[in-house]
Length: 440
Ligand code: FAD
Image (cartoon, rainbow, N blue to C red; front, side, top):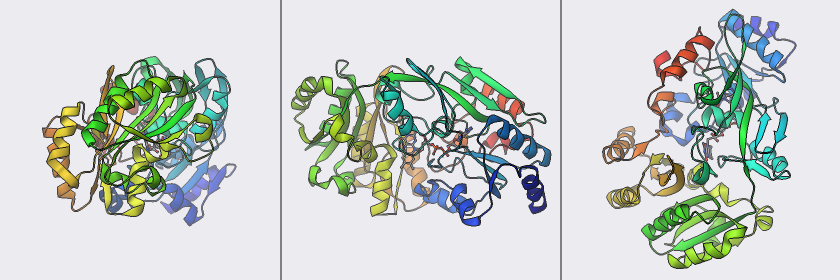
C-alpha cells in the first residue's frame, strides 16, 4: 500500500495533504468509543493520508486519483459521528471537508451550502434573515451540515420537522462519483434519498440545498417532577400542544440528572427533569401546561440570556451520554423508538435501575412519539444484545449504536435505489469500504 500512497501523494501534491501521524490519528476517528463494542473493533483503524480540498475541481482530482490507484476514500466532516461512520476500515485517503465551507446563497426558506459549513455558524447568519436550520444535533456547535446529512438523523427541531429522512427535509444535493471519469451529479426531490444518511458510501457531497424554518426567540427551561411517568406525560403533552411552538423536549429519569453536574443547582436529588426549548411568545400557555402536570420550573432563561451561556441543548440528545461517560466511562447507551408512553412505562418498570431512561420527543409520521437514548452500565456484549432483543420483542424500534454497519442502524436494510446508485457511482467499492454489509 505504501508505494501506492506515495503515487497518490505525488498526483495530489498541489493540494493540502496531511501526513503527520498524530494528525492522521485524530482525523481518522470519531466518537465511536461511546460503544465499548465499537471501541474494540475500531480503535486501531487509521487512514494513510488526509486531504483537505477547497473546491469541486480539487475533489474531482482526488476522486480520479483514488480510482486510478484503487485506493479507498473516506469522507469526513467534523468527525462527531458516534458509530465510527467516518473511520476508515481499510486505510487510504481521508477527505476532510471542513474547508468546503461556503454558504452559496441564503433565501427565504431555503439555502445552498457547501458540506463543511458548521451548523451553529450557519444559524448565526441565517437568523439575521429570520430563518434557521429545521433541525440540528446536539453537536450543533461543531458538526458540519454535510456530516449531519451523511451520518446524522434527528435532533433539536425534530419535534416539529421529524427526521432528516422525511421528505422535504433535504431538497437537493450535488455529488462527485468515483467512476473512472468522476462525474458531478445533481439529485433533487426524492432522489436525494440515494445519498441521505449513506455514511459517505454513495458519492462525495459537494453542495446541499436545505429547507429552513422561521426562527423564534427560544427560551430554555428545566421543569422538575416527583414522578418519572408524570414527566414523560408532560413531554408528550407539550409535544401535542399545537398552540405552543417548541424546538426541544427531553425528559431524563432521576438517575441521569446526577451526571449533569453543571446543572446540579436546578436538578435536586431524586427529581425527574424535562429540558425544553419553547418560543418566548408562548410562555403563558407553557406555564399553564406545567401547572396542569404538577411540574416546577427550576431553570428559566430567555433566548437573550441563553445566548450568553452553554445552551441546554448540550444536556440533551447524545450530549447526555457524553456527560454521563465523563463521570463514569463504563456507561454506554441505546437509541430507541418507544412509539408510546405505555411502552416507556413497561421498559421503565422492567429494567428498573439497570436502564436509565432518557426520552427525546419527536414527530414521527405526523404523530408525536417518545424516542430515547437510554443509558446503562456496559457489562458484556451478550447483555447489550439481550437488552436490545427485549426492546425489539416488546414493540420498540432500536437503531443499534453498537455497529458501524449502515444496515445495522436505524434502517436495517438498504433500499434498492440506494444500492443501484452505489453500483453506479462507486463501481470499484472504494467509498468508505466495509460500512455497507451488502458490499462486504
Ligand atoms: P462526520 O462524523 O464527520 O461524518 C458523518 C458521516 O457523514 C460519515 O460517514 C462521513 O463519511 C459522512 N460525510 C461527511 N461529509 C460528507 C460529504 N461531504 N459527502 C458524503 N459523506 C459525508 N446525531 C444526530 O443525528 N442527532 C444528535 O442529536 C446527535 N448528538 C450527538 C451528540 C454527541 C455528543 C455526539 C458525539 C454525536 C452526536 N450525534 C448526533 C452524531 C453526530 O454528531 C451528528 O450526526 C453530526 O451531524 C455529524 O456531523 P459531522 O460533521 O461530525 O460528520
